Image (spheres, rainbow, N blue to C red):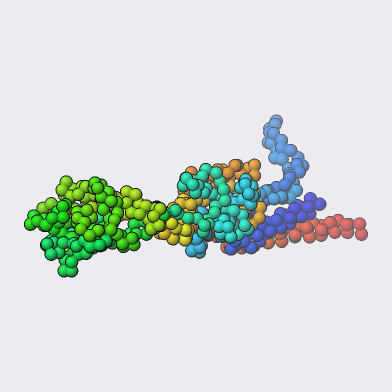
Length: 464
């Protein structure tokens, strides 16, 4: 008689635990990165009243007779199914598109680690990428001295103090056309050398364009290129010079003209002195009848090398290569310009982006960008074996296996979606259905107890 009562009690306890699990799921229906759980039951024990008997002497066998003694909790399973993705457009919000966990640490050496799917990260006062509870997000940082990615996990840091050093301009490449309808120079329109200047007489037709270069200290120089038609490499005007052009290169910041350093007995840079020869400053180009430049007849093959002193005299651009070999001379409007160049001033971190592979690309105030770090992920052979701790975090257990650390998008790990968050994977409709069945199960087990009590009451009443 008492067995049924204790079976009912065990049923109440088990259904209460299941309701607790359902309640926690529903409570976390909007928790970022939450993984729902499920409670399952099993028979706790069976009392054997009679064992099974085998067939013998014409009689058939008999089955065992057993009475169950109730139920117990079999498992509380965690479902590591990806939840829906919510768009936030916040740069530091990350969602994993596939398998893997973010690696978090609250220790200075990064060895005490927790794992999470909740990617609602932010930057602290020092530029550390941290979770909502202040744990640092681990990954790989680029060595600022070698620009090589480090191999050891450490806290990701995105600091506004990050900078890109200035780089001098090493080359400039011209492309485009010089209009062959521009009148060639005459004796009256040849550029005039005065004290420190070169003057092109008014009425002279020419093509002019500007480009920016940087010295080793990041000093900005605006170079003005003036293309005039009709001079040979000696600065002489002849009737055959229709396909001859010369280029004058002027630094608008230093207010000086440049000379090619390949030429002998010429200074690297100087003001145009009175009485100087035009060929000392004019770089000669010659075009063929097909409208293309003739590198064989152009000065130095159509390429010039300059040295541009810095604005304070200590950061020269040594060996600035300027390539004119892609220019053409057709009967069309002039549009020759610098289309390729390197060099930039010093810049500090302005903003950043996080790519699908976890690479953190810093964008600097000088327009340059570079990789400053990479977010790491961890995978487990048995994610369901992880133990929930608190604040959306998991920790390793003997049944989860050791973490397999890698980069997003590789080795079976999911890629990252920046500006999005993975939401809870709780199915609210399923939870309500489970809640109804759990309530009825609890109710039925309570009836077992009351019915057993009534039967005991009848037994006691036999004495009357």
